[in-house]
Image 1: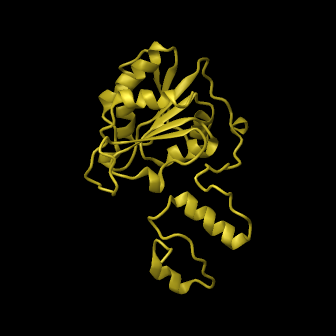
Image 2: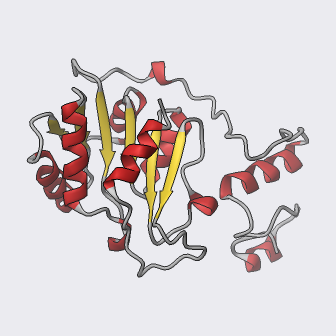
Length: 215
C-alpha cells in the first residue's frame, strides 16, 4: 500500500511501511523510508526542508561578470511549459534591475525557445550545449532560478539556490522542488489533482511577487 508499484513489493525480501503514494510529498516519504530502514530519528517537523549536504562552492564558478538569474524553461509535457512571451517579460524585468539572464537548453527545440526569450532582452544569454555538471555549476552560483516542473529545479533546491518554480498540470505538494529558499506557484484555481491537459497559466506579476519572498 506504500509503493508506487505495489506488485513489485511481492518480490521484496524486507518490507517497510511509509505513507501511501500520493498522500505526502515524495521527498517526505523517502525520508520516512530511509529513517525506518537505517534506524535514525526523523526531524520533529517533516515540513522543514532537508539539508541535502551539497556544497555550492565545490562547483566551478561560470565565467560571467554580473549577477545572473537562470531560467529553466524546458520540460517534457507541453502543458508544463510557460508561454514564451511571459519568459520575455520576466527577462526584461531582470534587465531593468541589472541582473543578467542565462538560458540552458537540452534539445534543438529548447535552444530555439531560449533564443526567442533572449531576443527580448539585451541582458540575456543563451548558453552553449552543456553537460549536467556544467549546468549544475551555473545553477549553484545563480542569484535565483526560475523554472517550470523539470528535474533541474530539484537540483536547484538540493543546492540551496533560491528558486521560484511554476506548476500547472502537476502538484507541487506531491513532487515540487523541495529545499531551502524555494517558492512554489500554481495556477490561480489551486488544482488538487494532476491533469496533463491543464496548461500553466501563472502570471508574470505573481512570479515577481514570488521572487520578493526570497530576498
